[in-house]
Amino acid sequence: MASKVILVTGGTGLVGKAIEKVAKEEARSDEKWVFVSSKDANLELEADTLALFEKHKPTHVIHLAAMVGGLFRNMAHNIDFFRVNMRINDNVLHCCFKYNVKKCVSCLSTSVFPANSTYPVDETMIYDDVPHESEFGFSFAKLMIDVLNRGYHRQHNCNFTSVILSNVFGPHDNFNLEDGHVIPGLINKAYHSKMNNKPFVIWGTGSPRRQFIYSLDLARLFIWALREYDDVSPIILAVDEEDEVSIKEVAEMVVEAIGFQGEVIHDTSKSDGQFRKTANNAKLRKYLPDFKFTPTKQAIKETVDWFIENYDLAKK
Ligand code: GDP
Image (cartoon, helix red, strand yellow):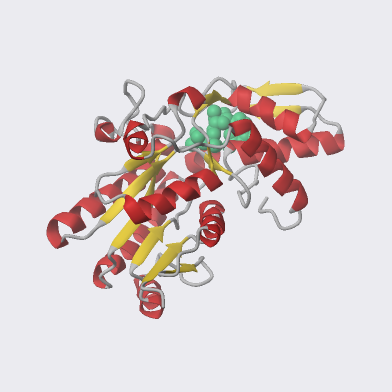
């Protein structure tokens, strides 16, 4: 009989699907996993969130549910990102408190990093400056998760923590061009460029840099954090600094994985967003010095293969 009931909100998204796969592969008899989506509860509503907790009575929670999107969706909807995510996070964490959840791990993002900073940024620097203005709604709402975690810990001794993620990609991603992140967007564009014999367009200059993380690597780290990481302060789950790549380099990997041989152009009328958000993963490396990340090129190839095989059901 499982003594731990682990509720995963946002359980059918990119990260949720990856956690489901890894949790199945590494199944433990004392753990029962429950993956829920917006179809199971509207977490913006307190009553729905309470009903969900009443139904499953979780002992542990991985809180992934959020209004998310790439740079362009964020820039166009800052206030929506702020309000929706504030409501969801407040409801979920308050229910974790009410239902005596032993541990909750929520997601922050490297977009919470200070707009003006020295690099790399580590966990101790996140309050040094406000986040970059391009995605301020999403970023401030994410930062407030850390405030909630600290508050519940200080006032009620709850073990609620968070992980800071860089740009995640993988199977089950959102491949929509307007709403999604750069790698799935580039995959979708390169696929159609190849099919229709059209130029492949990279938005922006291609020079911004990102530490991309493969969803299946992230899933293994997330499960480790749930089982082993007992500190209220956030921990950065990111690849090593030397694995940071430019948008141009990542576009080249996508082109190669798709097998596109036509013209590649840059649309520099589109925003570059934040130039870099380089994260220092030394805290993670202290716990897991030998953790091996999937090389980005291989992970992109696996994602491209998944996209082509699952074209009809892929979100796009
Ligand atoms: P971010 O990491 O939060 O900034 O979000 P994204 O995953 O959306 O990455 C944005 C970066 O990729 C910016 O520098 C964009 O100019 C660049 N980019 C290039 N092509 C695309 C594309 O097709 N979609 C998206 N979302 N970004 C693109």
